Amino acid sequence: MKNVTFATINDGTTGKSLQTVLRPEQAKRLSIGCSVKLTGSYIKAQGGSKEKQEYELHVNNVHVYGYADPSSYPLQKKNHTAEFLRKKPHLRLRTESMSKLLRLRSFLISTISLFFSDRNYIQTHPPILTSSDCEGAGKIFLAKTEDGLTDFFKKPVYLTVSTQLHLEALAHSLSKVWSLSPIFRAEESQTSKHLAEFYMLEAEISFIDNLEELISVIEQMIYHSVENLRNSSIGQELVSKSYKISTKNQTNLEDRWNFLLKKHWARITYTEAINALKNSSVQFKFPPEYGNDIQAEHEKWLTEKYICKPVFIINYPKELKPFYMRLNNDSSKDEERNTVSCFDLLVPEIGELAGGSLREERIDILEQSIITSKMKISNLSWYVDLRRWGATKHGGFGLGFDRFIAYLAGIKNVKDVVAFPRWYQYCEF
Image (cartoon, rainbow, N blue to C red):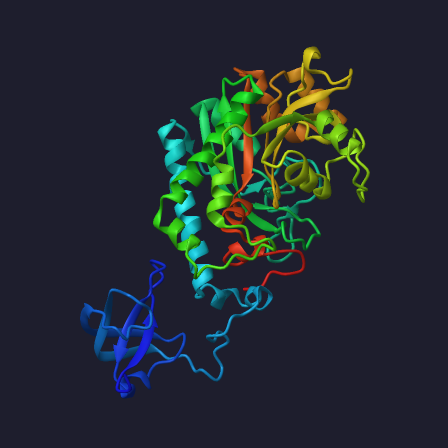
């Protein structure tokens, strides 16, 4: 068809592009990346359709809103590397793969909101600025005014590393609460799993005294999300041949989702995990020992070689976890060692996806834990007050939302699922 030219357009609301048919003189005004308004007849496609679409737009009029000069526009028809696109996030948003990831993010927010709403959880907006450090690890950003002053609030104030403490206060009012908020960690890391700013999905539940109840909530939430994704239009976009994932083993996305939908993931204690690691024939860079953190290489072996599915590691030694986690009673002690009622959810390829615990509601034990953690009770007096008046047993969890998106989409680097990623020594735009 020498007298016509084909052009593909997309407005970003769907993964389906529309093929248009133009006269050669009309097409001369178009370029990759330009913004246009095309009017014409929407008719059944003829045999020459390049995109094999059932219908196509035969264009009568062309209006170019914004021209993109091909000699300078960075995004061309060729495939660009993730590293190249990562440094041009304002333009990366226009790529087909990134637009699908943005629609996936929107879909997951909607389906998770429905999950919590159907179970009478209240969505809340906890603060981003805080005078409390939830983790007590020192990996925090200090808030300053433009002129460098830090006394705007008459005390040091930070960007939050977790909304958990404030969610606990909200849960004492509303029973079951959740939030999806930006979180900030000043970790000097440039790995594929870490960002300085990311989104955390957190929930807190009152009147809960069993760790399995808490684990069941996050397990059901992920099942719900994946099942709905599998049956959605964005799910079909992601499994289409035009979408290429970046994992080395090129796992089929449908197989990945079905893998997550296998009921009842494994539960093992921290001690069982350490013993399994020590009894393996693998020579780890960090030898597994009781009292040491489970490293990324250990997570990989546990999820991909030993258990071969998602696993909840429960009951860590108290000294490895933050002050607010509930000390297990004597019957749950591990070889006379103090452990806390907590879990980390490990998933193949991505490692730790979520973590949670029962919270320490006994005021005397909580105060001693704060002191042992070398923190000041005076800085957390309001948090201790929650136990002083009307305390209840409760628990909660946090899930790395960007990691969750990356895993579901088969993306190796979490930087590639965030619109404007920020990481150590990089915060452009």
